[in-house]
Image 1 (cartoon, helix red, strand yellow):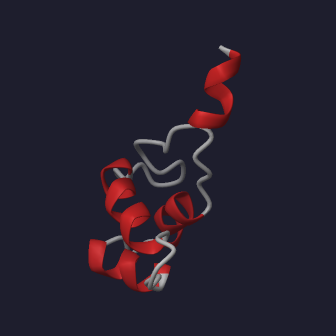
Image 2: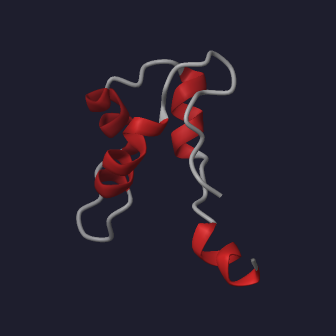
Length: 66
């Protein structure tokens, strides 16, 4: 669904980094390495990095069924 606002493990705010991460790491032309993007954004903890890397944006898929 929507990216969580805070990390499930440590409680650090990770939702503010989602748009920048998505724009830089998931483009189809000249993808940047997700690890480098997260380093630039200042996301250092493994648990927080997991929150952004593993997230699947399903809002558009689920919204027709509401």
